Image (cartoon, rainbow, N blue to C red; front, side, top):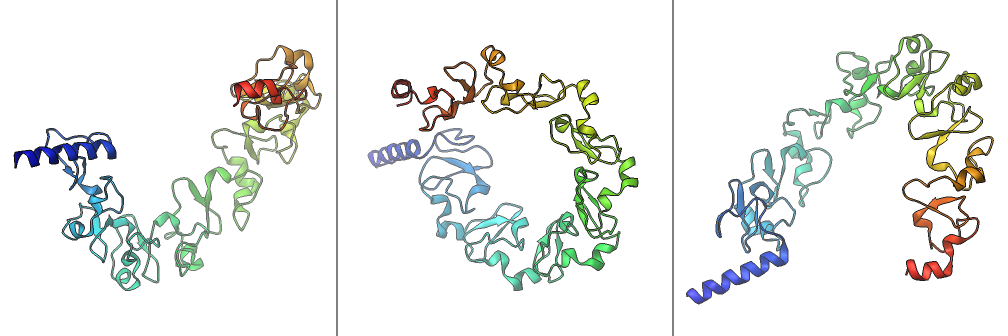
Length: 330
């Protein structure tokens, strides 16, 4: 008997090594798991009690998902059993419109009609789905019956609920991202997010600046980039751009009126209107940014992953040099 027990321990130890590292948070001794953890039925791995019968193979040998064992398993607080009694799912996943139980019992219409949504969820009018309150009146239907976007309900300010990052349009029928207000592109069906009077009082969100017209916000990185973003063209005004300090990660062209993305320097494709980002003399003394590689001509930087890719990216074809590629990129 002792010999058999010893052999069983050896086999359990071998299985434990083959399947995973030692117990998560345990075991504290040869046969004991840390508090809140239980041992897998057929090996020495310890797992959180709530991970048993959740549809995922945590023990490595599927013993934590064995149907017979799961039928007698009690789900942890905040979880419920599927209809087939073999899986536990978080209560919040009940009647959420997504099937989580293999037998689809968590989305059974009859059951859902009698189901009480968990805290922080509300029922659709058809009484079969629970959604977040912030999903109501956001112009994206989440209920099968579209009741979360019902115009009458949404027009009632007392019922319109926008999430912390959203604001409601003047029509009180939609929620849009607050950062999209006064960006020159209407997001509200009634264009109220671009109302000039409102936008003149609007403070731009972080990382944005106001155009000279005082009604439009654009990303700071777009100022003096050579492409007009402001309706009044003020973001590309030459006089302003000469005194403008480029945003982080940008580089000023020799003409002193344009900022380009710093890694675009010496990449073989002119981005500055005066071509100064590809000036050979400057590029010979330029150090390529991290992740780029300098061609043999010493004036061009290419993405490192282009080297020996089978297609020349360097003007001198040095990135596809047969001798280099045969030795360094076998």
